[in-house]
Length: 157
Length: 422
Image 1 (cartoon, rainbow over the protein chains, first blue to last red):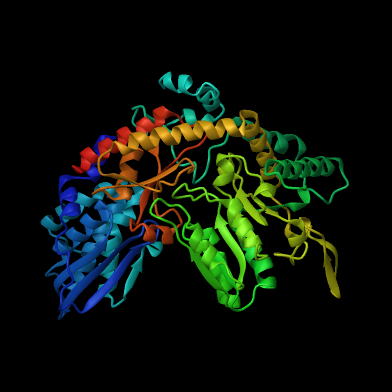
Image 2: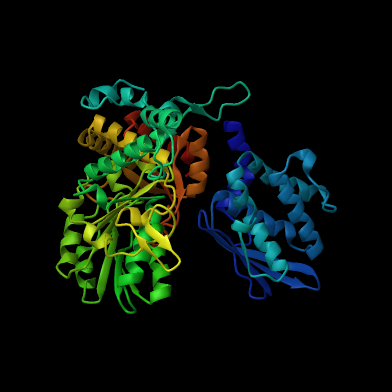
């Protein structure tokens, strides 16, 4: 029981939850999307600075639980410097990690070992289905911003 | 469970009462041969568990007496109709309604409020007319009025509360005016536990001839309610929070108001005669009960009322008050915990925030200890804004809860704090 909790709330998650990275609004961002979970009121704004198909900067602001805040923070570290296509691959891979058993996860494109390891940190959420939306909230917002949309609601996840 | 529970509440044998609720003996999160944690159910404000008496009454009805009602000449239809209508009389007595003709069965409290908004509201409210609500309303007593606002251009006024969660009666007095056409206010907040001064609220409105609706979804569970003493014009509640089944609500209305109101929905069972030249409607309450009602659930509500009355409503209230006092005292000793809603005489509902830990994380962790609480904004977003807390954790107590369970909540919260280093 406590093992599941420890797996969900790993040290790195507690750290990112308490001290989120890239928690700011960049002046030169050119894409932004709101991610909202109406059930709990968690709300994030994800900002992208997208130039020539590359995410030059990514940051977020808002309010959420430890899981959603940590996931948003780690997301910003993972997608910075990636192309839009690479970010989408990361998102799809992460989504599968959070929602599907190992043998059901699809191949969404190449993900380097280091990134995969970081994504894996969040996958403990699989044991807590009601928390999956927390973990994927900022990722959905990032994906919406990539596609020029201004919001993503967990109702649609 | 420690013996303290039995000793401290001699008039109310909670350990004996718990045996009536089969679900309370289960554990949760058992896996891989490991035993789970005993269930500590502190979410009765969302929905109460059901005693065996209710479960068995519904099963017995389905096995022995079930039929559609009000329309058959056969034996079972008559039997089922008699039992169904007997519950209407029981409900009337339960809230001291002057007649069972004032008791309308609906699908929920929500539907009961929508019925009043749609039927009374559309008929008697016009552009510029004002409806007074309070800041502590459940969405069920906000959104129906907003729908009416969109349609009829009525104006919604909101009574504030103070930092303890006490309704601001002076502000209410000031809001009442010649433009006020209806007041709709909770009798007990589902977030703060605040019990509102219903009698005063009604008296002040009646000075101006304004009818008042009370949302009694929480209030009716925690103490005796007398709609004639309050002088409520409308009073709504739901069966599932009252240890009865889901899918059933009650609308009490003064008969002279109900009989001036047009139907809410059309269909069978609410008409006197139907022709394409014109249809005439039955008097209340049938006028508002189109279609086959939740018959078995009404039987279940009757059993729930019998059960509550067998324990004694005063005894239940005293037990719950003791739990509230005890749990408040114990929770207050948890550092960094802030209780939202500290009105005197409140119901056994405790919402709180824990410094540095989001309620969702609290909910997930205490759940691993078997403790079931509600986290979120409790369908009362304006109130969350008012207290600037966003989501909170809510522990709501029912007649079957114990002091030991309040202790279990506190222990699980200490674990949360340790976990987060908060």
